[in-house]
Length: 113
Length: 115
Image (cartoon, rainbow over all chains, first blue to last red; front, side, top):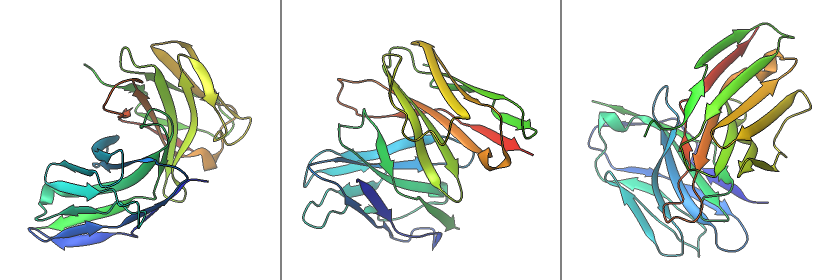
């Protein structure tokens, strides 16, 4: 079945550091890929998405490129801020996100000033 | 828009009691999802509905769990009887098919503690 494997956390970085959170997936066909973010005490919210190979999703300085050859969707940001501290979830869907999402285990990110 | 609304935000109950969690999806959305989040198991999809009809309930842990969606603006998740291992944060999410955003909108969650 479908699965998503995420980099184990927690991850602690200093402000302005470069961030990479690895995500790889297993799925048949051509899934859509997502990064969701969960701030403390809140529900998940969509950070960015990509629906086909070589698409790059981007939002709030974060980027991720859909790499079919390596079945990966790594999240990157060039300069993190304290406000980026949250839990990040990689996810996939077979049907453009309207049907069920398969989530990774989440990566807790803490940015220190 | 008010977003997805869940109630209560926190629930503490004793083992054996019935618990009912409530969700109001975003108006006009035709998909509704129930998730459970724990440290041990992460985020799990329990059940989802399309146009008020349950599509996939394979994630429902056992017969103690049931979910209903009597109309497009309301859904419940019921646990009867509750057990300590049911302690978790339960999220409801909704989405709209046919658009370009493909986004599920999550509610703030209900933190359930069963003692």
